[in-house]
Structure formats: C-alpha cells, structure tokens
Image (spheres, rainbow, N blue to C red):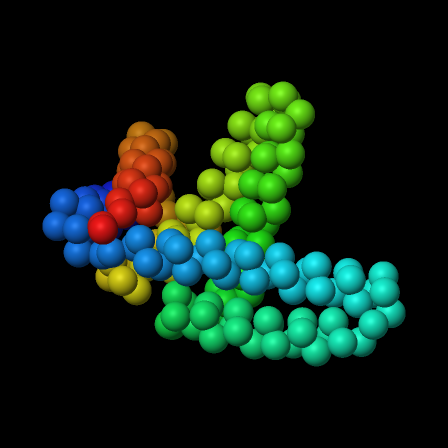
Length: 177
C-alpha cells in the first residue's frame, strides 16, 4: 500500500469517527485542561518552596504530581518511546502559551496574543494527534522513511497530511454533550 493510500485510509477513518461521533472527547478534553492546571500547580509549588524555603510545599508538590500521573494515565493508556513525557510537555507548553497570550490580550497586544494562541492550540492538537491513534485505530507513517516517490506524489501526501491534521482538529472540537 502506497503512502498516499495509507493517508487516504486514515483520513476516511477520522472522517467516519467525526461523522458517527464515535469518540466523545468532551470529558477527555476537560480532563486534559485539568491536567494542564495540575502541571501549573506543580510549577507554582516548586517556585513557592524555593522562594519561601518551606519544605511543606514539596510535600504538596508530590501529592499534586501523583494526582496528575493518575489522571494522565486515563488519557494515555498505551504509548511508545517518550510519548508520555512528550504529552505532558505538550500540555504544559500549550497552557503556558495560552496564559502568556491572555496576558498580551489584556495589554491590547492582540496580534501577538493571537500568534501565541495559535501556537498553543497547535501544541494541544499535537497532543491529541499523538494520543488518539489508539482510539481511532491508525498509525502515522514516519516521514524519515526513504521512498522513491515523485515530487507530485510527495506534494499529494503533504496535502493529505494537512487535510488529516485539519480533520483531527475537527475531531478535537467535536463536543458531545
């Protein structure tokens, strides 16, 4: 099966999941935002412990971290390589860029805020792209594999990848109440 056929098949699966509303991401999205906030709480507890020299904050940090690990396991059931850590950092980075964007928005720096919001949302989408593959039953093919595809085939594959990313973002936005 060619790369293009694989992407086409994958695109059909994602479109089917969207159409049939088979995946209810609304609870998982809420949980992911909760996890983002737990990561932020961990950071604040660390800095507070350092600034105040009060070791009680480290105990709280450990407790919050343990909660975050339990909750993250609800979203990341199976993973390979460093996907666990990548996922945690994607959520943390998404949250931080969102917070900085909000501050910029408050300062009427709308274009700068929008740039950070777009980056934040892209990171959040990457989190779901990586972690939905088990739920939607697909695997993205490595871009590093050698192939003898023509330039036109490669362009078609890039277009399919863009379309796939758009569909995955649509799936993420698909809240079932």
